[in-house]
Amino acid sequence: MSLKEPKIVDLDFMQLEMYPRYVISTINEGVTIGIPELEKLFSIFREQYGYTSFVSIANRKFDYTIDPTCYMKTDANINILGIAVLAKSQQTAEIAAFERKFYNGSFKIFSEMQDCISWAELLLAKDAKN
Image (cartoon, rainbow, N blue to C red; front, side, top):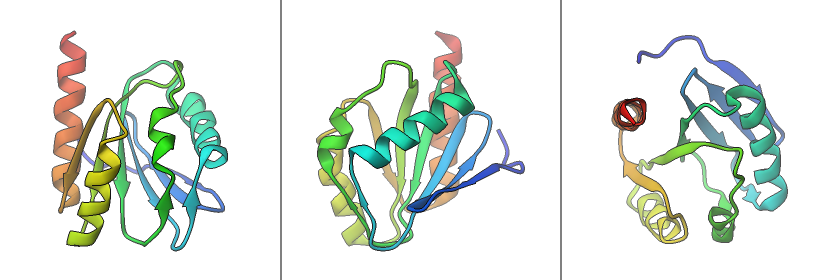
């Protein structure tokens, strides 16, 4: 799966780059992500992906806060195969490692975007075989 022109969705708290089977999210500086923001995302995911499985890639370019209990809120209509986190600093990687404890699915931290995409493609290939 190569990078093609994504569908760009700008929200007041983040930008989404939506590809056919994965989404790259970049949350704005200083934002706190809670249940209301998560519900907006789920609505967009349902609209874009329907019942198709996809992977979420979090580009941790800026500092922001995620209520870790959000990872425990699931929507049965959202088929996220996994979450890849792009962490460019050790501090960001440590925060993501803490958040991983609250998520029951596949969750992996990377330092390069291409590694995130490659991992997403691997998860999608495994899903296609099942």
